[in-house]
Amino acid sequence: MKVSLFVALAALLPFALAAPAQTEEMVMTPGGLRPKSSVIQIPEGGSISLTDTEVHLLDASKRVIHVSPRSDAKAVPPDTDATLPEQSGWISWAQWHRTTSPIQNFVTTWVVPPNPATNHGQTIFLFNGLEPDTGSAILQPVLQWGPSAAGGGASWQIATWYVGATTFFTTLQSVSVGQSLQGIIQRSAQNADGTFNYVSSFAGSSGVALSNSPELTWAFETLEAYGVTTASDYPTGCTAFSGISMSTVNGATAPVSWSTINDDADGVHTTINVNGGSNGKVTTCYP
Image 1 (spheres, rainbow, N blue to C red):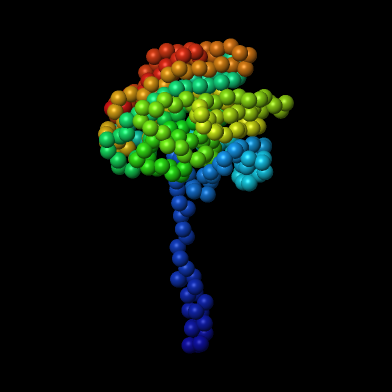
Image 2: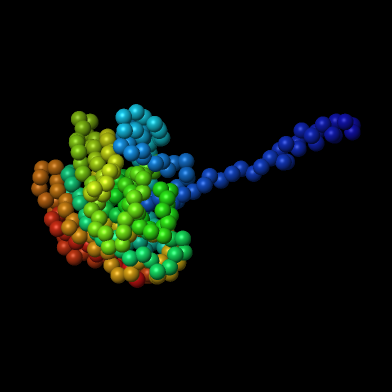
C-alpha cells in the first residue's frame, strides 16, 4: 500500500509543479494592443500580398517569408466611446466614404507637433489612412510619439503600417518637431479578379506595397492615443491635416465631404476647414 501511494504521488508531482500557462506578450500598434506573434516587421523593399485565405509577407526578391491567416472580421478602430474622458483608441478623426469611382490617390500634409510636456508612457499616432468597407484592415503612413511594436520612445518617428488580423510595419525613422510630412496612399493597379494594389509611404521614404486587396473605400484623418492620463500627455496647439488631395481612377477630383467624431470630454476636437479633394484641410486641436 505504501509503495502504491508513493507511486501515485510521484505520478501527480509533475502536474503539481508544472509552470502556469504563460499569457502571450501584447504590443502596441495603431490598432491597439496585439499579440506580439501577430505583429511583423516588413524588411526593406518588402511587400504584402493577400490571397482568399492568407496574408503573405514578401521580401525584396518577392520570396514569401511569412504566412498568416486572413480574416475579414473588423480588426481596426474606431471603437472608442469618445464621450468618456481619457479613453484609448481613436480619439478624434474625420472620415469620408467614397461615393463615386475608386480612390486613386490620397495625399495629406501635416507638421510634426511639439513633444508632449509630460511622459506617462503614452503612445500617440497621427495618420491619414484607407480601409475597406469591412473595416478589416487599414493602410496608413503613421507619425508616432511613444512606444509601439516598431520601437520608439519620447520622440517623433514615422513608419507605414498595415493593420489587420496580422499587423505589419516598416522600420521607424526619426523626424523632428516642426518638420513637414506628406503621407501618401496610391492605387497602383486594379486586377482582373476585382482586387486592387496599393502603395503607402511618406514622401521621401520607402513604404510598402499591398497587392490583391479589397477596394479601400473609407478615408480617415486621425488622432489615436493610448495611455494618456492628463492633458499635458498630448502636444500643445493643433495639428492641421492640410493640402489634402484625393483623386479617383478616372482622374477626377474626389468629391470629399468629411464628417467628424470628437472627444469633447477631453477637449480634443477635429474641425473641417476645407472639404473637397483638392487642397482640403482638417484640423485636430489638443486640450
